[in-house]
Length: 159
Image (cartoon, rainbow, N blue to C red):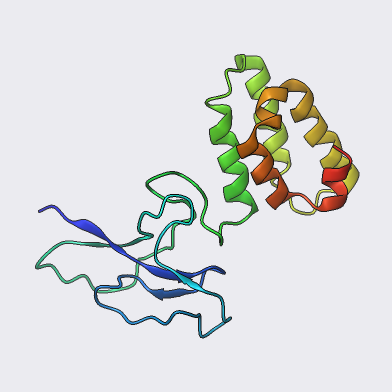
């Protein structure tokens, strides 16, 4: 039997309103935090992946986990955390044309930057290493957009 993914309704902060809009109710604003409720990816307007539905089959239990990324364009949803956004930077490296050695250095720096409590001076040092090893990737619009979401303004000003 083949199935399909339903469309979920999730607020910008990640509160799940319904796992499938076909069967569940949702409001325009989240009753938990007041944020707008989203049905589609903000980048490509594709539906937000909900539960996997198989016509005629009833599934009990709640195994649904909200997706951090759009399964159409790969952009992170607004509720995606630091780890997901740094994973997106890893994805950009795949298209960066770096040598294997340079790519390894950048990946190691990004892995270290997953640590949220890393002192600011250490973060600056590691981001500068990424910039020096992969300037084209670092200066690209997608990388800079993500960088702005995972670094504090003080750190970004030192890069």
